[in-house]
Image (cartoon, rainbow, N blue to C red; front, side):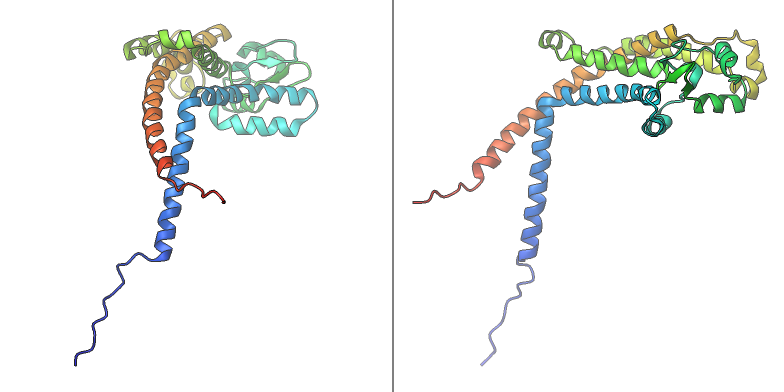
Length: 262
């Protein structure tokens, strides 16, 4: 008599694999629920992020004024990769002036921003009791992110959100890119270090931007970005939110209901 054949069970799902797939499913559902929540509150999350991003740099001079250099240094260091932090392009608080153009900055500090040593020193300079202390991001960045926050708050008004459509990309280019490009690149190419590397650039009219032009062009850039992006993002989030609402409702309906005790 032949021995009975034993069928292989290697393809049968093992308890460990079932547990792993169950964990993956739970993680996926948790992510979907997070996206579902973000779909309802994305504008609040964006505005909160921008408020923190543009607000924290103003704490650095406050900490310096209070005699707390360590937390101020942490803020300056965190924002250092995100901005040039040149003192002659930054706002100052608690001092004689709110800003110091190159010539005035040199008169106060003896630092010449038109040299390699000077531009590095201008980046490292945070201020003193006479001049005040600089904000941890430059004037243009304050205008860009401050305007983005302001536009985000306005976009949160239901009447404004219903009336505002996406800005055409041609208008975005003309409003947001052209002004900041002219002001920023003209200044960049007619000042150190470009004039030192390419002496022919000294033949161009010298242009050092002012706080007004940095703020105006930065503000237009921030406005154009929000006007272009937020209506598109709102439509995408609304669609994703509707789809996830149906899916999560289906998942919740399939979940086992707890048994009531007799």
